[in-house]
Each structure stands twice: as structure tokens, then as C-alpha cells.
Image 1 (tube, rainbow, N blue to C red):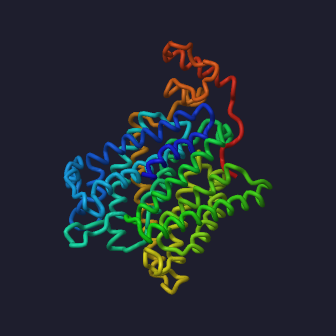
Image 2 (spheres, rainbow, N blue to C red; image 1 turned 180 degrees about the horizontal axis):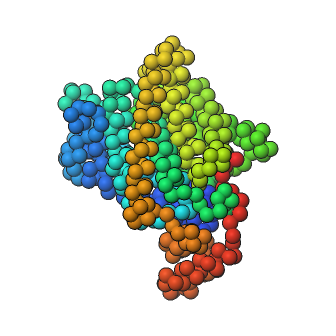
Image 3 (cartoon, rainbow, N blue to C red; image 1 turned 120 degrees about the vertical axis):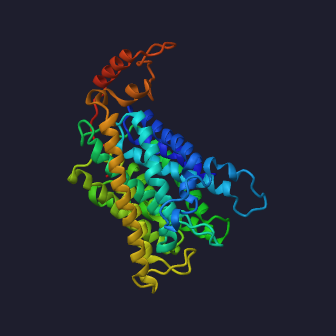
Length: 437
């Protein structure tokens, strides 16, 4: 499945944006979150998201309905949409959404508490919100789905609310708890822009599966969605580069890749609702506004390491709300927005969905992060953070070309790790900033 490629794509994209002393930790945070959430998805996550809603309220699926997913094994090979296919497809949504938050808190959180956070966040935030947005009532009325998808009737084709707004506002909540990196806003520059570009390209490819697969069939709807996804990405990249050119006097590789991701984020909820020209506009708006939103972190003083808030929260909000303006009844989603004669009704639904997810995710995520910080401790100590998170948390270096960490064939002791980290810190003190501009 193309969506599975988004896991290494995100790891490379994030890994290239951090300093050379943080590459492995960033990759481990992404893959670690995938493993934890993937296990929970099998136990009860799929049930929570797609089980029959408790009391028909549309808030949470029955946790035991598909416990362990054993009931999906004896399926019908002739079925158009086997339940097991839905389970693995949506599992990838769950793991990617959780992993997105890692980019906001790069360089400064402990790996063990991060894994704990991933599991608790998925359980208390992602699984319920996925039920709200993705769980539709069954055709025969025997299974009740989520309130946003069914009672409210908002349009979110592939996860602008459940994925991007959810992860983006969750990232802000965690940032407020763990605080800024040592020395921020001065930070090391990205260690590898080619890695960033490779990661962005893999993500772009995987996004065709992410959005196109949400059509649940290889027909016209999936084709339209893939076309709008492509158009929005191109429009956003060009818009971001124009902003950079006029604001900073140059267009950067990091800006181009960030623009592509901003366009993919914005088109996620609207890919089935707009025309190809509408998709270009959605992308262009996201590509112009997201780089301006990123600069707010310096004015407001929150350290969003890899711009999860500026790209995913802002891009997700834009894409969700723009459906209310640019949605057309001719598109697969079948609802008309303000510019296509639909009035303000759809825009109101989009706003309710967006801000309901935003509010719920922020409050619950803030509580989770605060509880972890006050009990086992989320944040690295300043000394260990300055020493370098790769050697402190994983006893490894991404680019240990000269064998500086330990002699070949010998394992590092904790004391040796700290000593090596201190030596490496003295050799390469961080300068500059890794923020797209």
C-alpha cells in the first residue's frame, strides 16, 4: 500500500530537518510511534474508531466489538471492500497522525515517555476523533457511526480534521508543556536537505494512496481525488517559493519541500470536494499563508521545531474551511459551498467540525503531556539535551564516520556515551535556525 511509504517518508523528511546529532532520535520517534499505535489499533483502536457507537451518540465505537481483529479473518474473498483492508488502511492513518507530533518537539524529549505519550494520545484523542470523522452509519442502520460524519454532515474526505488539525493542535499542547529547546531560537541548521527532499517526495507519492484510497474504490472518485491532490501540491509549492522570493530575496529547497507538504495537508479534507482549478487555489492559499504562520512562533515564543503547527494545523484548518467556499456538488463529496450556490450552510458545518476537533484535542493532549511531565518526566535535562539526543537516548550517531562514539567491536558504557557526547558538543556547537523561511 502506498500509504505505508509515508512512514519512512516522514522519518526522512523530519530526520533531514534536524541537526546531525538528532537524526536517529527523530527517525526512532516516528517508527516508535508507529509500533506502539499499531499494536493498540489491533487490540482496541479499530473497534474504538469503527465499532458501533455507544448509545448511538457518535462519540466512541464499542471497544470490544472487534477486539484483537480476529473477527476480520474469516472474510469473503468476493467482497468489494473487505473489513481487513479497511483495518490496515485506517491503521496507517492512526500511526502517521500520532507520529506527526514528533516533529514539533524534536531534540528535547525522552524516548520512553514519548512512546507512552503516543499510546495514551492515540487512545484518548485519535481513536475517538477518528470515530467522529471516519465512521459512517451502516447502510442497514445496524451500526451507528461518528457525529461529524453523520449527524453534522461535514466534509472531510481524507482527514483534515482527524489527522492534521488533530496532530497540529496536539503538537501545540505538548510544546506548551515541554517548553523550548536550549538556546532557542538559535538552533542547528538542517543536516541534510537531500534527505528532506527525498522524504517529501516519498510523502507526496504516499499521499496519493492516503487521499485516493479514501474513495474506497478504484473509480472516478479516486481519479478525481488524485488529480486534485497533484494540483494542490504544485500550486502550494510555487506559492511558498514566491513568498520566500519576495520576503527573503531567495527561494530555498527547504521552502519548496515545505510548500509541497502544506499543499498536501490543505487538500486532504477538500480533495473530493473541489474542482481541479479549485485545488490549485486551495494549494496556492496554503502555500502563501503557511510560511507566514510559521513566523508567528518567533513572535509568540513557542518552539515548534519542525513547524507542525504552521503547516499541519494551519494547513488543515485552511483546507477544511475552504470546502465551505469552493466545494462543488459535481465533485465526489457532492456538496456545494458558498461560491457554488450552496450558501453558508456547508461553511458552518466545516467550522464546527474543525473547531470541535481543535478544542477537544488541545485540552486532552495538554492533560496527557502534563501528567507525563509531572510523573515520569517528559523533557530531557538541559545537560543531556546540550550533549546531543542521539548519543544520550540511543548511544548511536547517524554519521559516526570516524568511530568517535566508541571503538569498533565494543559497546559504549553510559559514562562513555556522556563523555563522547560532551566531546562532540564541543566540536560542533549549534548555530542558525532550521525554520523554513
